[in-house]
Length: 359
Image 1 (cartoon, one colour):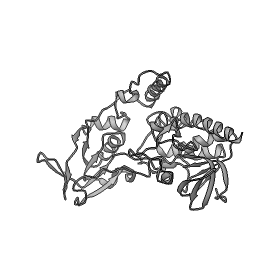
Image 2 (tube, rainbow, N blue to C red):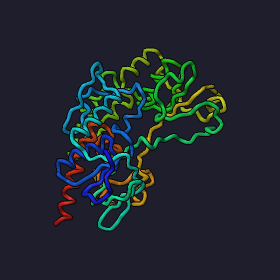
Image 3 (cartoon, one colour):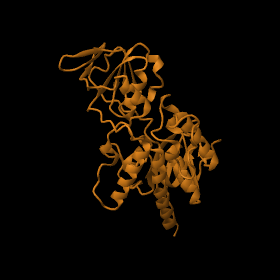
Image 4 (cartoon, one colour):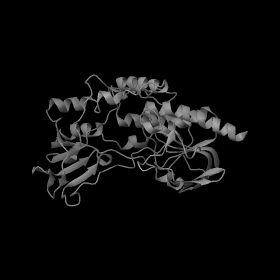
């Protein structure tokens, strides 16, 4: 869609991935004047950049955005990332969401009665801004002694695509979450692998997939709203979902983790107990941070890198909502189904705010 001339809107949504689209669905239903600004040239958000073998944790019908169930993917119980991209692109078209792309947002600042959204295509004015930029553009790789002397290849999850480039090499996979386990499973089909984690990995029971996680998380949220003690939700089940590729890795005997190494050497990694291991590459599956640089002019971030919220609304700047960054912006908000569940009350709050302002 061709970018239009910037102007004033009730709401400007920053980010056209799953959280931004979910917000757009409810904003359209509320008949608010809004635009979605996305810095990607095509639909699909971060799903366009995941590794080739990635699958959802649950069947398509457990991963909908609001209003339209994700169609099943022929021949696949658990949809691929490409299928999700197709769904998100079709979702935009289905609901005729006003997505402008590519538009890079450089900053958001207080402009009196408005929030000003500065972009490479001009400045938009908004009564409300919804930030839905996710985390994919902010990979986190912890600083580790010796990183600068290692002669092999280092890359992060966000740069990994497929195992064939590591054929017949020795690859160290760092990280005890789902991405670490799945990339280990992938790479170990063509290379010798060593898995390194800061804590012993916690595997979920074999029969737990996204359907169970959805039910447990829903129960946790209901308990929270009822004022009951937090039982930890899905965390009590473990950290790693035993998707088919990880189950197969266990059968091959490669699902064994070593403790975190203490330093990198020119040829590999080393522990303080004297052990050393040569390797050709290190893949850092060490997570992501919220992509919030565009909000820096508002001065809202705390030392832990987040912005204090009441639900999805910023505590210090009530004209700002944040969607899709994790539980601190709403229950499971970084998932497809969670994006829908957090966007609905956020837009209800936005509509009330605009209604009060108009009185």
